[in-house]
Amino acid sequence: MPASPAAASNGKSARSARSARSSASLVVDEQLNFLAQLHRGCFNDTSAEQSEDLLHEVVDKREAANLGRWKFDAYELERQHGYALLHAGFRIGTELLDEAGVTNFNLPLRGFLQEVQKQYHNVPYHNHVHAADVLSSCAYFLREDRRVSRIPLGSIPRLSAFVAAVIHDVGHFGRTNRFHIASHDPVVVLYNDQSPLENMHCTIGFSILRQPHSALFKKPFPMSEDECSGLEDSDFTLLRRIVIESVLATDMSKHFETLSRFKAAINYSESSNHDTKQDAPICSESVADRSARLVSIYLKAADIGHAGKPLEITRRMTIRIHMEFFAQGEEERELGLPISPLCDRNEVDIAGSQVGFLHHLVLPLYKAVHFFITSDELLGDCLNRLEANLSHWQSPNPCVTTGDIPHKHTSCDSAVASRAVFPQEQIVKLINGFDHQ
Image (tube, rainbow, N blue to C red; front, side, top):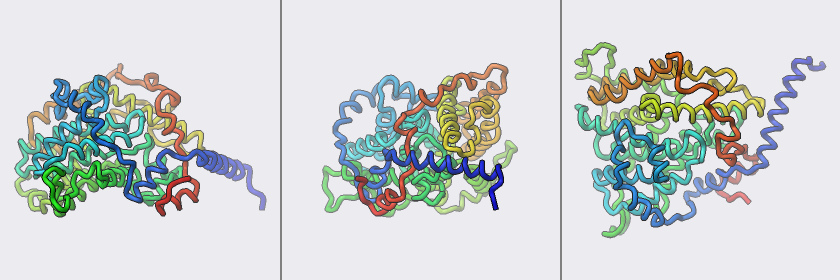
């Protein structure tokens, strides 16, 4: 039976999209060799010593004093000194490693941060500067947790929050899970469509931690006074669990489920009476369960916390995330894929989308965090700023409009934007651990 004109047109469109993806697959993705190395558990060894002079020059400077404060501006640190994640991570990591009893960690800490920063792509938003920003915000929540919470996190969960923040978007391509699934990217083949990006971030992060120059947590045998002491197996097992659960929880498709469970665990109430917290289920959870839940919530709040930062920081971050969204929408159009929500430059009302983002996602999360950490500082720094920013986006003259968003050809690293789907034979090599020839 002959196909109808509509069916023929749809078939032609589908073939065109498949053809575009097939042509793109001829361009070998820059992640191919790296992911193959992940499966073998080895990287090109990078000496951490090359960063020593940089760290010596910057970590004690006055600009770093805002680290862990809500007003910290990661892009200002990057503008003045570069290597924002390296500097922020070394300063915060040093404190938390000391607290956890790890010794002689300077070289592997440098190696870890240097390698992670190198694996962040030069995309507009999900880059190493975003990681530095999230790390600083996590440090803010850790400080308030220790200062106010009845059941503050212990040293290993706090160290876990550091690792999770550093690696939480490493290797991000500047595209969403929805895009990778629709375009049948290799990352979704590896992780079976289940939070593929977040799973990849964990894989990359822990693979880096296995390397000799960045083995922060490996306990040396036999022990040596001048080697990093690492962690006991039980402590590393706890750290790994918390990091993985926390990074996976940053998948926005799981946002409402994660928040709902947290609210139930803390007996959340909209009323100002916090007496219900006394018998909250979270108080009787095991240390491991409670720690994983709290670090997940703190990381999630930090990950979307740019919406509640001082307006100039919020403006910059809003422009950058929409650079990625619109570039994705243009690529989806080119590939014949459905254009994802918020990604069509011709349709998106940025101010309206920010109102919805704040009202439905960010504010409910921060209200729950404040319910658990009843801190005047958190109320003033975060919740009041979120309300002020919400009012701004509802005003007649919002600080960002579609015209402020640069077009694709000026917005992202072309090497990342043109990343490709791997041919099937490359997938086989990847899984079997062979280098691409």
